[in-house]
Length: 228
Image (tube, rainbow, N blue to C red; front, side, top):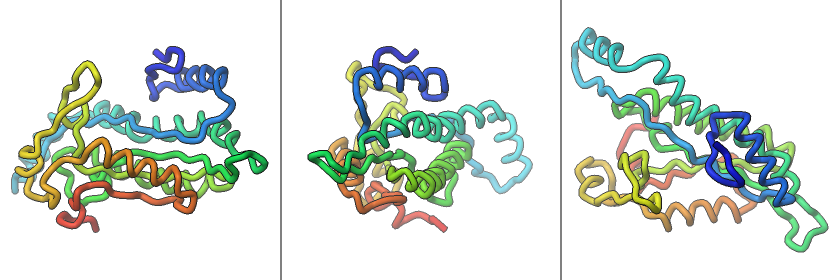
């Protein structure tokens, strides 16, 4: 449950409302919102030439409930999180303030999985991330009327609870370079770092001339896989 500016179930409108209320009691405005919730969902590679085998394996291994959960976490929660915080974001615009012009920003963490053609075995996740990429563009165009920018970051391989299925007490994870190298399509031959993700966040936050963009931070993966 949402506590005082604490953990929140972003798939719940009630909890998002409580989070906004709690934050509004402490702050007059918000400059930046980063939507970063994610869920991987089922994985069933279509690695057979037999249509019957592929159809049966995925049919038995995935459910409409699985798909609904992945879409709810990766797409729907992004939209309602941004929607809930729009008034606080717009409140940060103060033409007469000492830091004018301020440019409130939403940064959506999508994924290169939503850009590439390969399903990588997880159709639901890649379809959801593709929707997240497009949702970012939609919000950018529509929220521009309110002077709120929306951009997206599409990460490649980064250590996280989602990618490594575990984390320490500090919520940190480690991804060995060998795990990335064995994939064979990552020119950087290593995972991304916290600093590299932070640099992308800072760039999109500070550069007020960037709006509606999806920036891949992927070690060159999209240079080696099909994207159209």
